[in-house]
Image 1: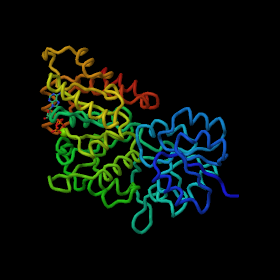
Image 2: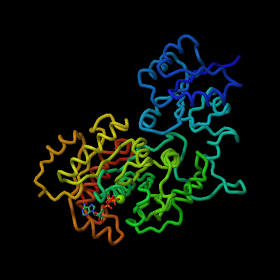
Image 3: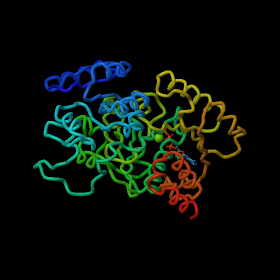
Image 4: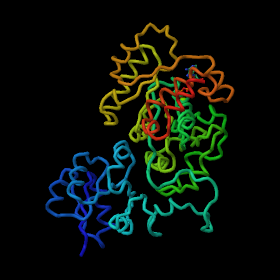
Length: 406
Ligand SMILES: Nc1ncnc2c1ncn2[C@@H]1O[C@H](COP(=O)(O)OP(=O)(O)OP(=O)(O)O)[C@@H](O)[C@H]1O
Ligand SMILES: [Mg+2]
């Protein structure tokens, strides 16, 4: 008997892809997400494939009916990362193969599913040298269990020079320090990225190297392209020169944003003060979006306009979805923090004080959060609020206490 598989996905293109790939072996019934309730009753499918936007009540309903569910992870985004744990099978990456559906039906729980040579995921799971032998060395992250980063934190701002890179670099280093888990720092400020300059790194490769990679990037390639910094974080550099190719297309941005979370527990992304397509892609994929602004009326106005832009583009629902960090605060601005917070409609706000020590540390190639205790404490406080999973699982609170007590 041919199993019936219901595909609930809003994009006809994705539904068609699934039909094309699987129709020889399964009876595929493509429907809109909102039809899944009724169709589950009428066609009694063996498996329901859903996209990341399925709401919790639908998942609960399917759980109650006992039908198996799997998530089509065409794109890793906010919803996907939050909800992956709710599905029977957390992650199937397009292109799906009949083999990977067999594994789902057989009750495989760990994903991506290492199955057959036809499954590109299989390749990604087991990095091999050119001669087919395993590549020795430290594994970035086990791909069994959780399949995606716990957080993809994107740092943006409407203003150049507001401190985005300083905040991104220090958040990445502090998350690694406090959680002990793997952290990637991706410089998506194309074409003006300066993460390597702040970290005094001279990377030989940069993110353009991923252009020739398949959609599912191998661990060995990730290791080759990214550079490990002495703080323990892995850095993905942006292209060094300003030339045509420096403006990256959205598909390359998406490739980076969907693959890094497969290899790292946390991914931090630095962006530029622009709304280029790759910047917007980064905002779309963020589980936490941070806006670094300064404390003056012009910047506050710009930030409101920036937030409105993000709302108009359906990247955020409300300004309060964005974490505001007021950087370079001196306390002499003559602006009340509560008023600024209310003006922006922000719910989560942190302030970082201006300090010569921060500038000096950067100029000396040091990580300021490790060189200046006050700044380190503020960054640790932000990490503490940003990464609730780390608090639950990694003893973060204790480590944070130790750090602050030093
Ligand atoms: N809290 C602070 N105290 C003192 N100096 C700071 C602080 N934050 C940032 N700076 C300094 O401000 C400068 C600009 O910071 P940074 O490069 O992080 O800004 P940016 O927003 O990333 O800029 P761009 O838009 O060019 O990418 C740096 O030289 C840094 O040393
Ligand atoms: Mg910068």
